[in-house]
Length: 272
Image (cartoon, rainbow, N blue to C red; front, top):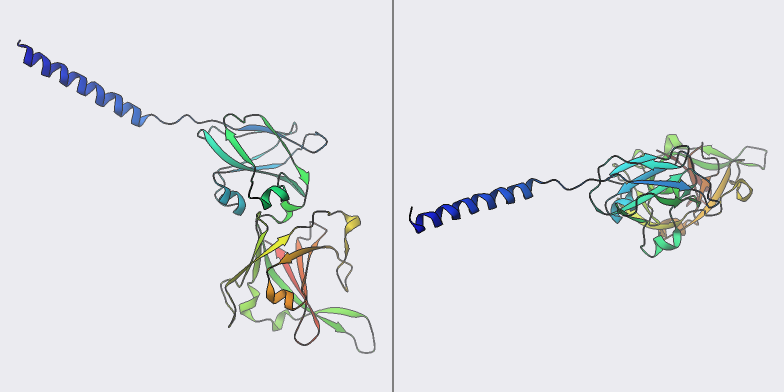
């Protein structure tokens, strides 16, 4: 066997070996990790039954879309996912009822709770009372409209439903609240003549929210908490005010404003 033939044989063997190595490298799946942690309150007491959601991007964290994993904390406040995460940075939202890891000042600065997997395994998360979890990534659909009414011979003001006279194009209106403190006011699928499809405004959730801080919705016995909004010119022109029910089981939001007739109108939105 001459040297040239031996050279080409060796070259072929090396070439085949290189292809095999490259193929093996390309087919190698990335290592996957589970994510674990615990949830406590500001007093370092475990929180049972908290919901933990993991997102891949800040945009998904803000909107609540494309959740990669959802977990719940157990009796020890512990949670653990399946081995589904590649190494990298993710975003986490932890909530239970009116407490969450949402921090208004950081969100205003565009800083969202980030987690690095696997290095942040067994991290402790503190959920604090802030009410953002009552509103973050929630949709509220219009379910009734009332107008102030006084019975003949009486002075007390009551609310009378005018839902039967509300245009069908208005009946599917809804409002969405996002974690970045924006709210989307939508006309729904049916757009009334001369109306915008959507208006993007801003809001501040009722941070202090206990029964002692609630007040009665005007002309009712319903306990509510008023919250602030901005960049909604139409509603500001109507001297509109926004309220959230203090009773979470009711799941209602209210908008009170002055109609062109001079009478007050109360719109009722229900969480869906």
